Image (cartoon, rainbow, N blue to C red):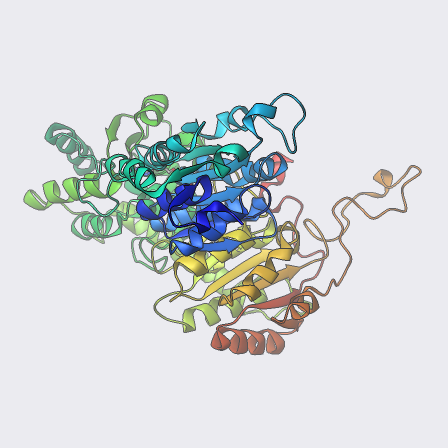
Length: 576
Ligand code: ADP
């Protein structure tokens, strides 16, 4: 019986749980076991919802997505050694996507370090590349400070990862309630108030900088606004909407920036992306890195003379990219400043402006082409036919719009241009690293954080397979998540090897890209008491979507796709 049960004593587990609760943490994601099981139960007693997963990898992805969706650090709890190693997947994912996440792990008894203790590992060392802060509580007294510093660091400036290490002996150490409560007071001092408008992440820029930005946009011939998931994280949608309304500047959303403004917005250039990127001369980039997803901001994809105005919370990012103008600040605040400045001395690019006309023409041609392809009913299914049916089912949900989770090579690539995003922060995808296996963790987090929204995950069978067991988690917590699996029997689908590659003593083995054809993922879901559907025709898919969306219960729809419908590496074949 842990000593925390004695109301006069706090042990390290309870101390940690109290610190998180006092900081306003509402959810924790993780896998329990020695030595952190009582940390999880203590957290639940303190009013924190603990979501227990099968693998720390998915729990970590969930915590990172929770950080993005709430703007507060997502919390990942792991056991020592291998648990912490699995947790690195989520920690690094948060760090690379610039989402706040705090990983908390138990570790070996301090006195036994170096002797080969149970699950012994120098966890402080292994987290280094993926955190802004790592702290070890060497005694129970240090727990509140380390947790507070970790929470604050994950949120400050560019959001990212933090790590809290609590050795087993510290988790079992005890203190009197009185003394413990005094130590816990530090939490409210260090952790910034998350609802406070003077939050340090809301940084402004100077009037001169605003003036410079406005002047560049005003004198542009082919202006463009690009926004990404940093703008979504900053809730910049209203400010962006206002700026575009006054100026009529066209915009391009990055994949996870989609939804800040609806894809169907008349100024959206999603369907004319290559022209928008290839010809624009002054580009206001808000909360999006000029990384591979934006072709590094370089020619030949961008025009040679393009001038970038970068708005980013991270000074290093701006210094590294060397834009024509860099504005270090919070996306929402800076965009409000720019919109205010334009309002005082307005300018606008009329609908007849040749740049807008060109983009509109290109977009409408492409939309027309896509509509023609979507109108064809192809069975056995290609990608477009089921995606069109799914698009219509999601649209029929109205508001609040479902959260779309999207991963897979062909499945994600093709779905991105078919499925529409109409509300901010309703898309979670493979992100900056193009990570596969995030889907189930993201789905759990999205549903826990936004219970009012249906969650629809459109997954390749390979992406699903990384963490398929977490469908049990969906059933256990009764989460309204519908997982739609595009089942083409493998990574990229059928065996694409030329005959000369199928030689040698193991030539009769399946291709490295193959899975069991026709795998019944729907039956797997039924094994846990969820609802499973198998869909190979439009009628079957329509019925499955209608039923599962209405039921608001965990479901898997196993959509059988022609194994040769996609291409190797999706649309990134040039990198393989
Ligand atoms: P995308 O994948 O959508 O292109 P990225 O992840 O590459 O977006 O870029 C997000 C950027 O947003 C990061 O450089 C990050 O520093 C920045 N960012 C994060 N929070 C804010 C904020 N509150 N205001 C402005 N920029 C932010």
